Length: 179
Image (cartoon, rainbow, N blue to C red; front, top):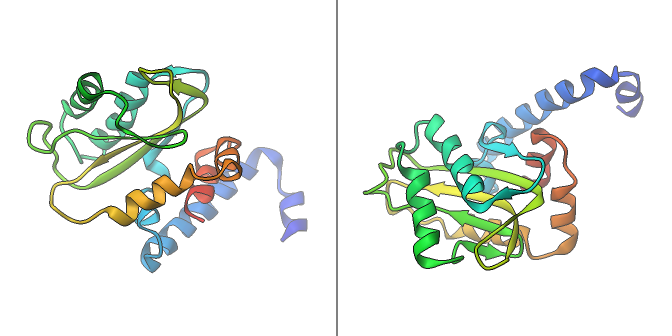
């Protein structure tokens, strides 16, 4: 395998690995080991370069859910309003925020999870720096405690967070998140 990869044209490597990770994504979801792997796909992830505001991070993560048909147009704005009203309560682990809005007032149509990663950081209202902004929407009362535990665990070790932040493309980021 190593010699195959070495012979692969550098310009085609990312496309090759995108295809491999897409196949792995399908397999992981069918196995169902990780709730994070079941809910998050490579198309649900965006990597941003340069610092962005916390509002931008939330709005971009919510926009991913909107494009997937999970939420209505107001979801991102409602999630931003929640932070303005209640503070940084969405920071759930070192470097990780989990944004959401109420399902009734923000038109949630189906469960969804998205992620915006910003290796340069996203400064929140009280100077807290976050690198991963997940956005979560749920229509029912289904229990997502395991998902939240998996997301929180990502920020528990510096080594894992460093590995996450070193990823340059969505496919490799997805791989590091779910394995």
